[in-house]
Image (cartoon, rainbow, N blue to C red; front, side, top):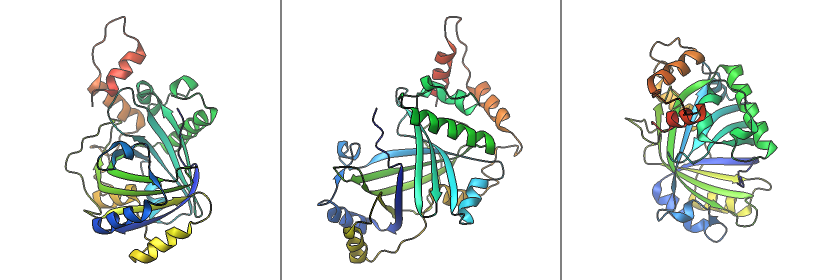
Length: 286
């Protein structure tokens, strides 16, 4: 598997109307092509899901609110409920004005164990790339360091355009951004009564790894859009409230959360079923 993620980049964010987003799509066409997933869809978009983790005192959320220049988010990125699809354990860091991303593609049967504190191993990953193992190790270290547990499920439809040669430039339009409380590590694509921080507005992101493309500036000026802060996880926490995003008893630690999840979803298994098979069953019940 080849991971085409931009490991280090700069990004600018804007809120635009659907009408402006469609006009910008026409502006972008001469410069970029749809990414491999958007090109398969008649709507040029595909679902994007993230399970965000945070500490008991929401330290990662408050780092965003306070504008800390060096901060990070912990999230699991996924696109469907297919048991064969990987789950990306991601660390998204901000260092000054730069965005740095590390991620490892994990096989679904191992997700529950890793979130429960099991040490990462190479066979947990889809790829044998040592960089992905290092990313997974860093994720688990930060998760343990912060006693981080699931807090929110963020979902949206993404339309993505990329430079055909080297993926150094990327433009995305995110629509229907929805956010739900999520206390247990269930990788579901369904949501009940989510909040929609930006309603029908579209989040535009301009991403580049080297120089700011001149045509980015031309597009921004042509459509009179203003750069703004758009943090999906932080906005979701602000709308939902920290009290609502704590477990029901407000005092459960990581081990209690994991044990409650396993107890609720455990299925009887025969003697010949392996632990791995049982984990796979756990993660397909959502």
